[in-house]
Image (cartoon, rainbow, N blue to C red; front, side, top):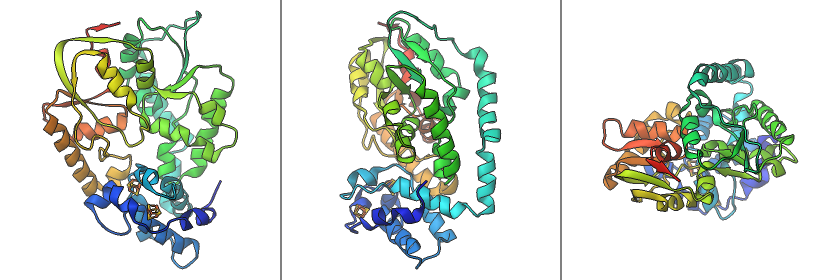
Length: 363
Ligand code: SF4
Ligand code: SF4
């Protein structure tokens, strides 16, 4: 496991060009030098060189980040801020009493059992996937914690795939690990990386699918922490990619207008317009800043609620401007953020799978 000091060369790659400030959604609402990655790297460089203490103030700036990764894509040096902040957070939390409490809450004993109980209680409301033996695509389904507790996605999937049989395998996956990574609980994160990739080792599959953009993004980061796991993950797609590729068609009797919110962690959203072309009676209207953060960003909303609410309101305004029936997205956490902003409004937030399952006819 790499420590903060091991990122010295990466941190030093920052040329202080400031381009990250022009793309960082937080810098736009709070133009403080330490908000975007440039300022964060100046601070962390001081910490690595021993000139600065990894203090509570610096920890606040570590937490003041949506982990949206927008700056990495824009940075001429391609520095991965999220990976470096995870190492810094680990260093800060490792000897803190609050760190020990968080580690306990995120342990197998507590975290896993909460998800297991939720899954057990929702089991009677889930359809069972038929295990087909004929030659159909074999899908390993990484459901993610939210969908393990709530049965909606399973119901929607079984309807969408009714005439497009696939063999779905659901090994016993743990959480993707994003909540552990965000809190600097790197030991627990590496534990779930190992567990989840070990589950994949013995399986033969055509696709590894999740419908949560954050899970998919976190899983794609496993090779940074574990050797030899890349081949297990290179068949990774999301349900949107699969539905577009299978050319599934959806007929809606009532005409509907929709817009799309692109989650920060969704790398490719080309599938969405492909699917919309296959939805009869549905008009897609692209909203302004459709790829800006919903404002929730995991525990960010708890630690920086004022900024979070500003982003939530901005997103809701952009959605209202296009005046649609639904805002569709592919991340269960974004749906919570969107619902907050749209509370009492005409437009409803919905997952792509739940929206498609509402079609009157699926061919
Ligand atoms: S864009 Fe990259 S190189 Fe430029 S200031 Fe930001 S982090 Fe540094
Ligand atoms: S990850 Fe997102 S919020 Fe964090 S510094 Fe980069 S652009 Fe800003």
